[in-house]
Length: 366
Image (cartoon, one colour):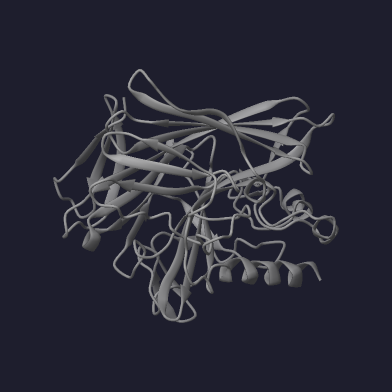
C-alpha cells in the first residue's frame, strides 16, 4: 500500500503544471534582489527561487511549475526546498497531513530583512516555521555586486524537545523555454542508481555517469529528449575526495548556462529528475542534498547507507545546522560543448569547457 501511495503521489507531482494555461507570478508575494546585470526573485508562497535571469537576455531557467494567473497558494516551483524530507512520508504521516517533500514548499515564508545593499552586495533574509516537523529554517540570500552569482545559506533549527532524523534537499528545477532538447547537463559524480529498485538492494544495478543501457537503449544523461530520457529519477554519490560538488545546464542555442556549486560534506548526493511530456523535455531537476533514496524514514533507517553515504541526518533538540550553495549564470557561445570541470581560483569560479577547449569562463565571486 505504501509503495502504491508513493507512486500515486510521484505521478501527481510530475504532472503538476501540465494543465497550466497562463503561467504567471502576477499577484504573488515576491522579493527581488537586483544587481548591475541580473535579477533574482523569491516567492514567499513556498519560499522558492522562481526567477534568476540576466537583464540583457531575460531567459529564466527556473520557470518550472509557475502557477496560473490568480493562484497565490504556496507551491513547489523553480528552485524549492525539500525539508524535513525528500519525497513522501509514511502512510500514517500522509494521513496526518504531511505533504510531499515536507512543509517548506507548502508554507508561507516571512521576511526577516528586505533586500538591502551592504558593501556592494545585495542581502535579504527570510524564514519559515515547519509546524509538523518542529523545524525553523532561515535563508540568507547574497547577490554579488556585479556578477550573476547568488550565494544562499540556510540555517535549520530543531525546535522540538527531542532530537530527530531529517533530510534537506535543494530541488532546482528547470523548465521551457530554457529547457529544450539542446540543453547539455554536466556534473562530476561517482556511481549511482535509478530510483524504484527493490529492497534490500535498491541501488542495483549500479549506474555510471554519463551513459547507461536502459530497457535495451543507450541513454546519455547529458541530454534529455523524447528518445533519450531513461529512468525518471537517478541518484549519484559525490566523490568524497572532492571538496565541492557541482552541476550545470547549458543551452548554447540560447546562449545561457546555469550552475550550482556546494560543499560535498554538506550535500553528498546529487539526484536528477528527468521528465518528458508529449515527446519533449518538460522539467529537469538537479536535486542536491543529504539523501539519495526517495523513500519514507523507516526505509531510510533500515537501509542506513548506499555506497557508504548515509541516507539521512540527525539533528539534536535546539541544534542548528547550516548549509550553503552558490548559484550562477553565464553567457556561453552558440557552439559551447558543456562543462568538463569547475574550479575555485583566487576568488573566482573557473569553468572548463568539455572537450579540451581552452575557452575558460571565469566569474568573480568576491
